[in-house]
Length: 479
Image (cartoon, rainbow, N blue to C red; front, side, top):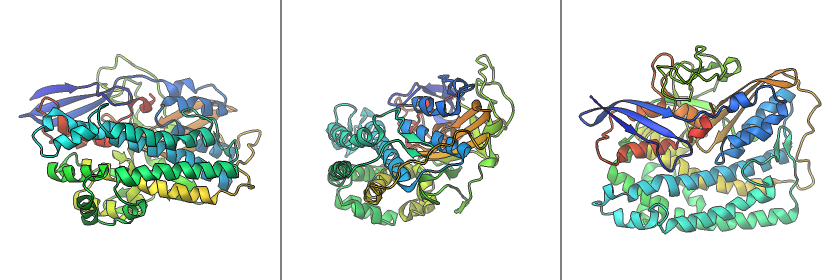
């Protein structure tokens, strides 16, 4: 048995280090380490409850809005209020823009450049992929960044600025939308959609949304092989990415884009081939292998985050969250299964969760959300309220807020002592997917997905693909 240490990975937010135990070049054990202590949960203790809205967006410059949404929902639970319909629509628009931009950046800048590496130079598709996706130099990058910049204009209009907006509040949004602004927003969305249809998908977005099977997806890719998403579909078939990085852990998701009593994608758990209710009371955080004081397995309302940097059995600053005692994975593939996406359901029945299905789910969501944004814009009632007034004092002493970042389920749990924060705990998507072992020695999802993969080539390409299919954002572990 030999050991190989990979990291820190580039094109990742924060530091990720993998320690692999190899036998004849095959991974037999893996440890996913997050090497940066953030301390945000400690920073929030003792502050006024509403101060969280100014602090938590600074956890990450990539999913800043997701942190705001989760915090606002936790505070809304404390104050027992809910936004009016217009407030929900604008929050959904702001949140969707951030998540779509994240999906685009992941596909074009983080994931696809790995296929332009010299290790694939012998493949018949390599020259094309190299020209299109090579890091910094690829022809796709300036086109995507220009389209992304057009989409991000939404943030200036609706959020004031990005990241770290203060527009999102427990009772809705702090600004209204005018008729002229809505016209401009529709024009920008139309321009962004044109890029997607011409470059990313090679077809109208309605056609992508209508694909209902893996066979239909392959047929579409073969008919439009020069579209960027289709390039991935075709090379994935040649490389067998549907067999790479399987993860059997349950899929979990929070409510994505709430609309009254419903959500665009509902909260839930997908396991054993069926959807179940997400019972957040069954969540426990483990710190056995984190550089934190180990209080045992506790619910976030009852847990704490106290550094212990000299702890001998630790290898990460990240905690290990578990649902009903088991590891769980989260992301676009979970959202797809929970909302009954036929295409992703077909992929899951065929191969389960793997590098291929995780990336397909994520890129497909770009098309689906862009179409839905058009509806949210149309539904804004210009003369109706955008925010519910906040009561003077909290009604409850505990509040939970769940949201869906691009990478998956994000949870905030706040406990008050009077009007001040006594405890604030956060579980991010990366905390779920890249967790270390728990108190029972159970691997996290990435650690499990790496088992059995060949990792003896110099660039560890298979390992890179598996890691990037989960898309680590180590700073979001927040501990």
